[in-house]
Image 1 (cartoon, rainbow, N blue to C red):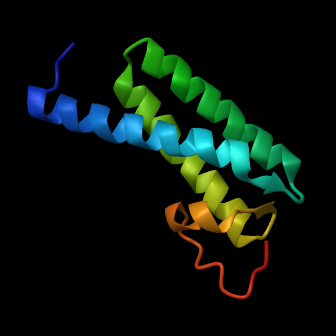
Image 2: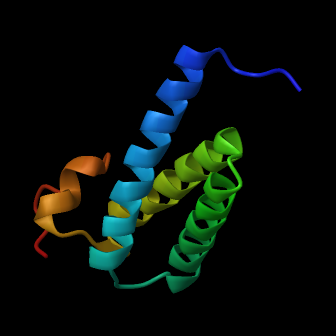
Image 3: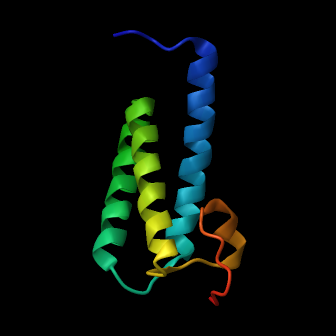
Length: 100
């Protein structure tokens, strides 16, 4: 298996750890309003990402982190989850006119 150059490895590891930390906070703070199945899917992918991170399979973990953010963004845009103001900056939705 081909290894990443050290600089790319370090960058991947930095971003992966940053995103895992943010997602831990997101899953603690968001509230599901509807479409709990999609939220459960995002949570399942998050658990898988943590599993691959522990196994040092960082590319797989980072790939799953991106799936999770995509699902969470879709849920926020469709207003199926409530996102507290302090973590809204991590989402693609502009949250205008939404109250939490």
